[in-house]
Structures are given as structure tokens and as C-alpha cells.
Image (cartoon, rainbow, N blue to C red; front, side, top):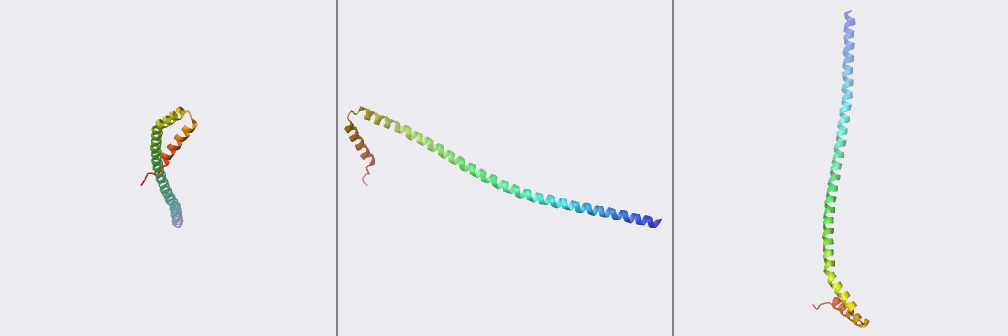
Amino acid sequence: MSGFIVASMAMAIFFLVSALCRMRARNGRRIAEIAADAEHWQVEAHQWMGESQRWRTRATQLAQENEAWKAGVVEGRADVISMVPMLVAAVQRHSACTCREACQAETDTSMRTLTAVPPA
């Protein structure tokens, strides 16, 4: 009987050792999978951080363009407002004129004055 007990103990130890080896192998594969997943997510997180940085840069550029556009609108509005009195005066001069030739001569003179090149 002692041979049977020794054999049973040897088989139990063998099964226990083989179960532990299988469990360790399974855990090793799982650890390797987790490590691979962690590396994959680190790469993806790095890519998303780069993408977010590019979008932040683009948002800053758009904000600067928006400010420049607003400044241009204000300047353009000021230019139009400053021209309105001149336009009104030109219309009043034109409506006060009774003869066509006099208006044409005045327009020609005004155009020559505007396009004349000042002496150097």
C-alpha cells in the first residue's frame, strides 16, 4: 500500500505542478497582451495629444484672423463714414448744375486733380 500512496502523491504533485505551469503560462500570455495593449494605447494617446495640439494651434490662428477681420471691418466702416460727406457734396454739386457740359467739365477737372502725379 505504501507504493500506492507514493504513486498517488506523485500523481497529485504532477497534476498540481502541471496546473501551476498552465496557469503561469496563461497569466504570462495575459500579461503580454496587457503590455501590448498598454503600448498601443500609449501610442494612440500620443497621436491624439499631437492632434489636439494641432487643433489648438489652428484655433489660435483662426482667432487672430477673426481679430484682423474685425479690425478691417471697423477700418472699412470708418473709411465709408468719412467718405459720406464727400459723396453728399458731390451729389449736391451735380444736382445743382443745370447744364450738362459744365458738369462734365467739372468732373474732368476733378478727375485730373485726383490722378495728377505730384512733382518730385
